[in-house]
Image 1 (cartoon, one colour):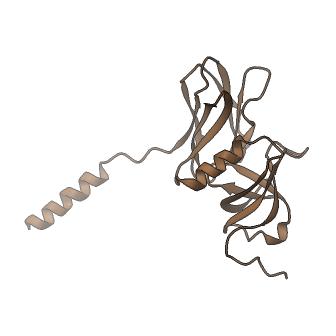
Image 2: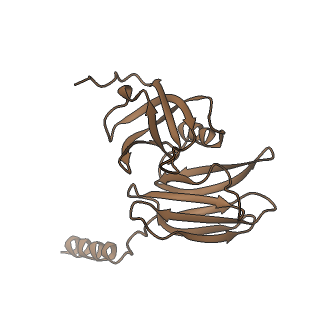
Image 3: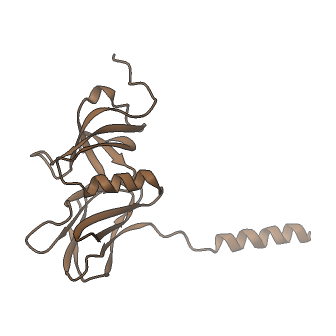
Length: 207
């Protein structure tokens, strides 16, 4: 009887716990000495553009979802000029931070899940000016806005072009080698020109 009563008490205690809050995207200005404007938009629902002025070391909770594979477009600007390779499309990113890298302004992304070399390499790609040198990047294939997309390990989204015959089906993990190109005339999402695959999985069979 005591065991059953204890079990009931435990269940009631768990049920009384608050639900886990939804993870949202935070934008941070880590660029010393400059006030910038941060902006974000839920592209998946064509939501309103929200914005905030950020001084040095200030952060802003955009209230935009950082989970559920929601496509969010972000910008940093100084009122007249876009900064650090933005605007940029991201998915499942909890922090987007402007930083100083040897006197150069860069943007680093922290995904909701995943750390380590793959994220660092994706952030190095993000910091490179387009057209970039060749990178081999890990990520996941997904369609966005009716185009073949590639979600990098840091949460950055690029649209694939080039040798699409080696690209696996949607939802599949892949490692692709290629270079970053400026967005096409139809949008703000950076292009990734695929050259080859860098993982051991064979390319999909042609139908």
